[in-house]
Image (cartoon, rainbow, N blue to C red; front, top):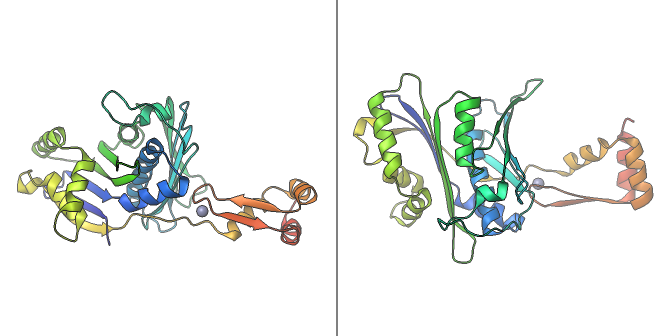
Length: 302
Ligand code: ZN
């Protein structure tokens, strides 16, 4: 079922991406064995990357978001594709810190001071790379800053992951609002008021999930935007699905071994006689025995 809406309001003042990513975040948290804090940081990043992946144009384009900081989480990475598939990784899934005074998980503290890098691989010789210093490390604020500064695209980003009593992700989702050229001031003012008084996104997702009706993202959209004057409400252009998917394969792991070069590969064969490579995104491991490594060594160029 589709969990993501792309919409534009009736006056053409803003574009909306709205998604419920509970399933994908649960999967990511399970695969990496995340603490609640790691789930929140990874889930927010994954959700944002999923929506930004849908903004890509070409079928083989790819987008990567990387948060790198001096906090205990060290690094969070998410890669997304235009078909809505997304995979993500956190350097320290066991990261744990005291709650903030507001009672919220301290994602900003987990990441610390550092940079946000967005890489868009669009089949050109060089990928597009945009980098900013982190604003707060809370992910959504940093991405809002990235859109405004690096892409000159005034935007508002909201992301949320809510835990259940066992500390596992129970509700997750996100919203990106992009202001369009020639936007009506009246519409933007109404939108600002709406965002100011809006309940927390994850509470609204919980309400949508518990409401009657099949299409939870449409229910969520009505809960958020339903109070706006009719002409400023979003009109759905497209509905898509953001889902967890890792595209690693034995062939890719072979290519990684080839890229070691003949010398290092020889050393690996002579000293270990086998190799086991683990995908950093999905934790699947690939084993190569001596014969297979010898065959790969033959393929290596230098
Ligand atoms: Zn994988």
